[in-house]
Amino acid sequence: MSNSLLLDLARCMAGDFSNYQQSSQNPQDFAHIRIFFRPLPFDFFGGIGFYSEQTYDYDLWTPYRQGIHRLIVQNEQIYIENYGLKNAYLYAGAGHNLDILKTLKPDCIERRYNCSMIFSKEQNLWRGNVEGNQCLIERNGRQTYLVSEVELTENTWVSLDRGMDLNTHEQVWGSVHGPLRFEKRTSFADELPILSEHQCLTPD
Image: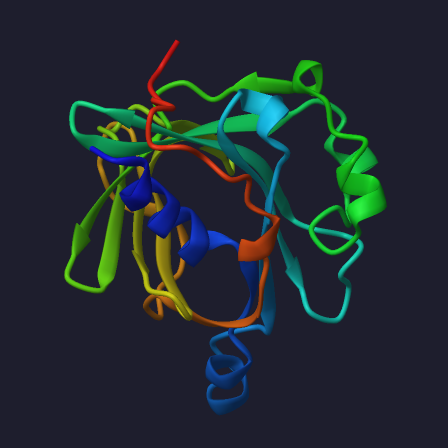
């Protein structure tokens, strides 16, 4: 798989996304949410990586979800490895503030095993799903596994995350009103590192 396909996915991801239209049309079911996917310097992973945060539009400095993501090629598919942040509050706002983003270092993250997303392309649409059913999250005193589905284009991000009970497989948390639908407000694609075709972004 060529780097051009991986970079195509990265360019689609890189941006500031908002579900303003969805939330304004149906405010009783959907809050106004912003998602930032900000490219990391090449040296962070030796390849393509992102810092991400999700936050309510009215409080951009208090994200309710933060993460680090590494894009790699594995078994002819694109995997996005997911990492948690130690002391995540120190980096709140990095999605829209480059000075904070620059303070991120590889030693401040820890791998979230079994939580990679696997992406494939269908015409102009990227589809992603979490690998398996062992991405475990404890919520409301119950052990759940994550089911995550994403559809991504150059200008849109549609996602549905649900937590399913590990034993009964019933939904414990997540949207009951369908997927969140975001539109890209600003692209950060020009911040992506330039890769040559001979650079092979595969697991270590």
